[in-house]
Length: 306
Ligand SMILES: Cc1ncc(COP(=O)(O)O)c(C=O)c1O
Image (cartoon, rainbow, N blue to C red):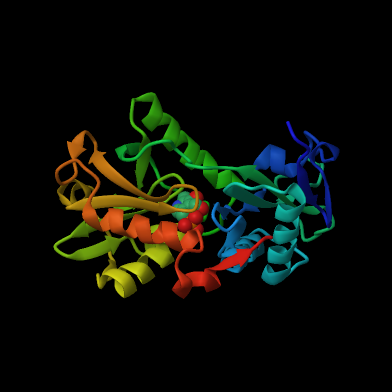
């Protein structure tokens, strides 16, 4: 493996120089928060573009605030560090960026202390093409219920919360599906383990509101924007019942890792004609152009690395 550089507590260092103790609170109790960001490679331009870096780092800082993690940088400074790290690693391919902030104290107390002395901030990179290598997704509504804001807030992208996501994904894949869809505690459609969900029906796009225990996705915001501005399709936030997935004309996921991805079957029931729908396909194509620097109008979302 080529030398990988990571950011850890104020410095860019070789990855193997970083280690954390088995006594660390993040290892024991998942006391940490994270982000998932992408930088997209444009082959013709020989350019790598960091996508919506500041938006992701603003969410990172908000997550950290909830668990009293001190991140001594602004969203803009974290974006600068990320660009420097991407340059240092020299990647010439689409790359996933993983910022992490965590409690690195070494004691068995479950509590979150006021003392921020041991709080750690790290960023590592992972070349990543498709997150799941599929063109269309067969999903299963999970028997696991999505965590709620007054349990383990999904809005806070907390390390611990992803046990709920992992259990749902594991159940789905073990049973032959590509991905899970979680319902919230009130029985409404919430989201996938790492992605938001949309339906298209009677000319309208619909997605669950923030109050239905979703993570307010940055890709979700962009889907709203491009649906309205590029396709002239209204997108509304509304609680969705499970059977609305079955009866939708189209269903699709949105997320940094998953990007825009069609769902063609829910609980073994075909969505529409069981093929990727036209609206999703058009959104996916526009999303591709925006993220790869091929759409001038959305160039502000991108930050060139080289
Ligand atoms: C649970 C969950 N929902 C939705 C999303 C999509 O959010 P975004 O579009 O900001 O990546 C993610 C990914 O971060 C996620 O983990």
